[in-house]
Length: 395
Image (cartoon, rainbow, N blue to C red; front, side, top):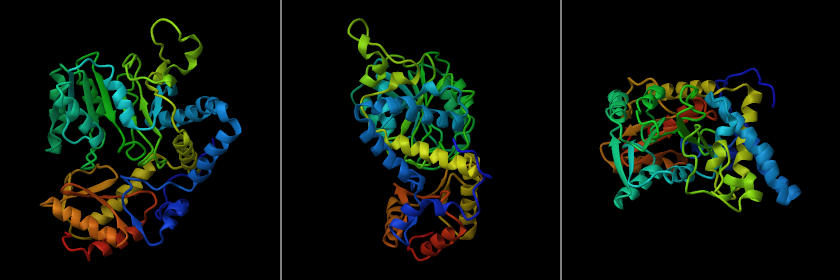
């Protein structure tokens, strides 16, 4: 691994390291880091290396993937999250695949405690199970945000759940759940699965899971702030939970193929028990390249978070804006600003007007999301504000 550089994110950001993505459409302003984050140039060679390894090794490429590529990625993930056991990391093309394996451990009807602010992937799946009587779902409202931790802890403390599932950062507001450890500890059922969806937190919000790693699953991936794109999702798997998922693939027993003829189905130790079938490992090559690049620059997650928070503050201080969710009294938020409009039509109209002008943001129902990243600087914020000043309906 390359030795860390001098450290920190310069005030002018790291745009020079994203030349291929940012230069592909000159003049485009991309403020949707919370959706599809641009990939740094360091990933281009990694993409090619995955192809070259496949050509060089053909059938033997899986020895390289399982022997070097995945262990390196697991080491990076553990270091970023304050975890100590890389063997506890399972990889998958999507977090949804990992959720389905966790659900397959549980007997229906599954008793689920969650929130009304989970991303569509889990929210849709839970609702579909609920339709057929295969799950009973209790949803704790995210708002008011100030009382959310107490309300969720109280609901968890009542017990009777098979699965407790909540996001670290809510996708439709940017609200950062404080003290995850306290919420995990509030679950009294010793066999309940506790799952933290960290997709909007990983590589954005400084995260230390050392206190909950023995009890909680943590799901995230490369599409957003890990800057590695699709196909590089993972789960941290606490020991002793979900040891024999019914939804299983041959990679979960990859090391035991020779002896799998008789007896019960065998599972890999550690996070390997959640592996599925054959997958494209290219995204994990990119993930490793991103981590090496950040290490070479000496950039930590705290540096990224500080840079983004400064850009957010500059944007909010510059001009009037619609209702900020959560409000300005919440100092901690994810890497996007969420603005609530009186009706969904206005949010969609502002999004469409910006897109027509070459400015990429997005909206969810009545909320417009504007995301920031290490590829932005203050000049980008000023240009965004200039565009917004011409858009009908803003603020």
